[in-house]
Picture (cartoon, rainbow, N blue to C red):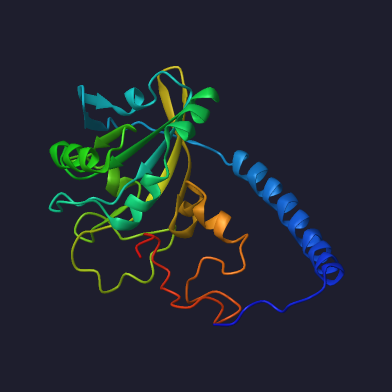
Length: 239
């Protein structure tokens, strides 16, 4: 295990100020990227998607819960599984009531959607002690249309806006994602979707760890050898 070089306070301060210049540049670039994201066009949703929820069968518009925006977390949960995906579970563990309240204060609803039947979802949610909205898309095209259920028998396989890398896929598989929607009256529009590492913003544990000397403690990070027992880049926070 290697540790950072020991320096005087003045040396540390000089190095910290150099890094601050890069951090400020990243902040400005992130703001520019967010503005570009808001400039994306949107696509009208004409298909009548239906979901099973605690109060019965509902449509996509109902998931907004009366608010102007909806963020859907595509939680990996195959209809045959007893438990949800461990990585999705780690993210959901960090979706606190405070997160939901802050989104609500900005006229935005967050809800999870999975392909598993509602009974399996409700059982798993009860075991985890979660209270956020979670719906089943079982029997609908929703997961396939938003490219989080990949099945070559249903549609050409695409994930994270790419079709390569899935040449050997022979059966259905679940993938994680997040999609944003906007409504104008009763008309719903798809505005954004993100996949893969773009999903790690929920909760923010990774970003707090990146402020520490040992970082995420995963084997891909630089400098190498910083953390004893570095683990693979599987975002489930298992010990």
